Length: 560
RNA sequence: GCGGGUGUAGCUCAGUGGUAGAGCGUCACGUUGCCAACGUGAAUGUCGGCGGUUCGAAUCCGCUCACCCGCUCCA
Image 1 (spheres, rainbow, N blue to C red):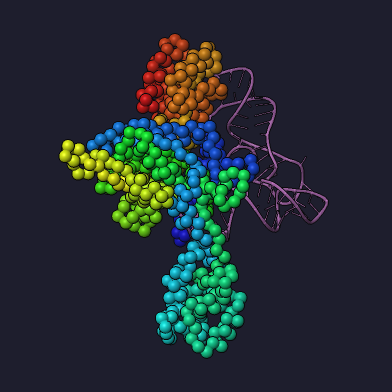
Image 2 (image 1 turned 180 degrees about the vertical axis):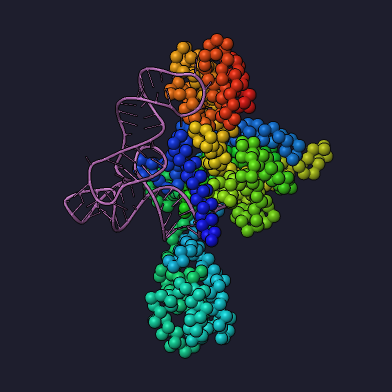
C-alpha cells in the first residue's frame, strides 16, 4: 500500500519548515512574541538579523516603487510612473471602516456544529439548509404541496430516517438522545407537517441554542457568536460605544481618505500612485504557519489612481512589474507564480470583469500549493465612491482632470471630473520576508554548517565579514581598519561583521548560516603584498584581491 | 472554534515515581596559517504554566498556554 506516501511527503515538508523555524530562532531572525511569558498566538518578534532583513526588503520596495517610480520604468501612457508616499494612522475615525465595509460586513455571528464541527454564518443557515443534500432529499418524499409550502407525512418522514436520512444527516437528534420522543411525535401526527417544521422536529431544535440543525449533518448548532476580525479599543478615558475605535485591518483606507489632500497639496495628477508601508491588524481565527498568517503584520501598499478607461492597461502593467520585482530579489523559478483569480474569489470591492491576481510563493507548508505574497486588484472606484458617500463630500471627492474633456475655443481641454479607478498592488512584508527566508534556506551536507542562507546580496542582513586569519602578527589591526572602512561605506545597507575568535572554518560556517555573501580574510600575504582572500558564500570559491580594492569589489557585488 | 501531535539548557534530544542529563553551540585562556581543528576550564534549566494525587512528580491526573498537522476561516 502507498497509504503512508503522502504522509512521508508531508513529513518531509514539515521537517523542512521546522528546520527553517529553528534556524530563525538560532540565528536571531524571528522569535515568538512574549516568549518568556509562554508566547502569544499570532504574534512574532524580529531579532537583530531579522529586523535588518525586513528593513532591507522594505527599503528595496520603497526605493524601487516610491523613489524610483518602478525603477524608472515607463508606464502604459508613455510617461514615467509617479508615486508619492504617505504614512497614515493605524487608528482612524470608525466611519472609515463603515464606509470600507469592514464594520458591517465582517462582524457576522457564526455558528459551529457540535457534531460535524463545521462553521456557518448564522444568517446563511436557513438558506444553506434549503440547499443541503439531506433537506433536498427529505423534500423528495413530499406528499402534498399546498399553499406553496412543502408538506411531509409523518410516517413517510420516519421511513426516510430509517433509510437515506441516517446516511445523509447522521447528526440529527432523531438519531441521538431524543430519538423516542421524536418518533412518538411523528407517529402521532395526523396531518402532514410543513418541511421547515419537520426539519426542526428531526433536529429537536427550539430557539435555544439554535432554531436550526446543521445544514451539513443535521447536528446541533452552537448559539451564534460574534466573529469580527478587527481589533478594537477606546479613545479617551470612558470605555463606551461612542468612543470605540478600530485598529486598521489594511493600510489601504488611509490612502483613500487622503486622496483629496494629496491631490490638493502636491502637484500630482492622475495617473499617479500613493504608497505606504505600515502595520495592520486582523484578529485571525487561526493564526498559522509561522509568520504567514499573523494577527499583527506589515503591508506595503500602492493605490494607483487612473482614468476609468485606462484601468486594464495599468492593471496589466502593475501585475507584470510586481512579478518581475519579486523575481529580481531572488524569488525566481518555479516557487513563484502569478495567478489570476477565479470569478468566485473576487473580493467585495471587485466588480465582475475587474482583474485580480495574486503573486504566490510555494512555501514548504503550502507545497505543492502556493501562498499569497501580494495581491494586485482592480478596486475600481469602489473605495472613493464609498468615502464620497459616507463622508457627505459626494462629488467634491471627484478628481478634476484638466488634461481631458472636449477642447475649448483656445484649444485647451475643458477638463473632466471623475472618480479615478484604482489598481492596488498590496504586498505582505512579513510574508515577503518569510518567502525570502524559505527561498534562501539551502541545505548542503557538504559544508560544515550543513545549511546556508542564500540571500540576494541586496537583502542580506550582513553585507560582509572581515576576519584576521589568526589573532596575531598584526592581522587583527589590519582587519579592524578594513572593517571600519567598510562600515563607513556600507553600514547603511546592513551589518559589517568582524570576528577573530576560534578557527577560520568556524567563522565561515557562522557566516554561511547568517547568509553573509562575502568574507574578507586578512592573512600573512596581506602583510607582505597587500592582498586579501575573498570567500564567496555560494560557490565557496576563494580569490585574492588587493586590500584597497575591497570596497569597490563589494559595491559591485551589492549592486551599488 | 473542533480533532490529532508536541513541549526537558541557545539548538537537537535522552530521561515512565526516587540527586536534572548528553551532544552540539556559547564564553574564557592557551594553541591554531583558509572551511564548525585541539586542550583546559566556565556559565546556562519556572522540565511550557497552574492545580491535584503522593512521603516524594519532568514522569500519574485535571485545567491551561504555545507551537506543528488536519478541518473551519482568511475582505
